[in-house]
Image (cartoon, rainbow, N blue to C red; front, side, top):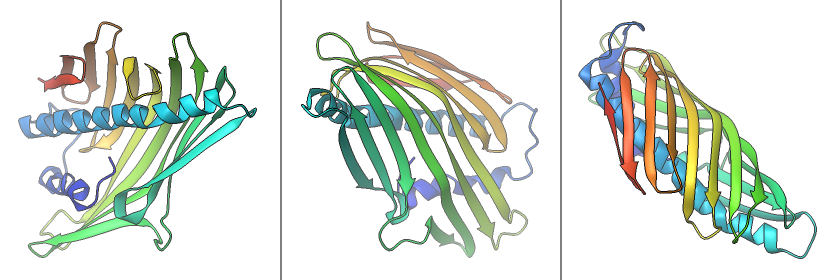
Length: 236
């Protein structure tokens, strides 16, 4: 998710897998990368719910009809993630869009290691959804969205090329109290072309705090388990 050069670094090892054919069993290294990336993305998913909680509460309690809360944070390569929350006391909308910074022509950064150039660019990242007020100051939130990015490798012996990293959020939902606390949540998304393979992630936390889920797809099956904010991803 959004980071500066450390975010780019997680994609550098992809050159070790260049030419990998989908359909075969994933290597232990690939499974390790999938475990790590899934944990990072779920962490980011939970953090975004935490960030939105206050905005939803503010829009719901505003006296004006169709009150709007907006905020932007600086993210990868000087670009921004801009959030907007609108609505009345009963319900409203939530949106996030990744946009260029004030003096940034594209959301891109690069690094050269041992004479090999790695450039990472985010072309698109957005999501959109709705929220509904529940009892006891809680809110039910649901959204979907997508992102598209590219890694370019130049100057290597035999791994130069362009690698696409697409992400499709099919459905996400949560119950939040507007103060950064999540009572329950669920998410279903797909990695399209991550490490040259396709994966589907299904994960949820119930009202008792139990986290459970699976990753299925090309060459591996993984189990997600845990409690509260602590969980592990295990790929076999």
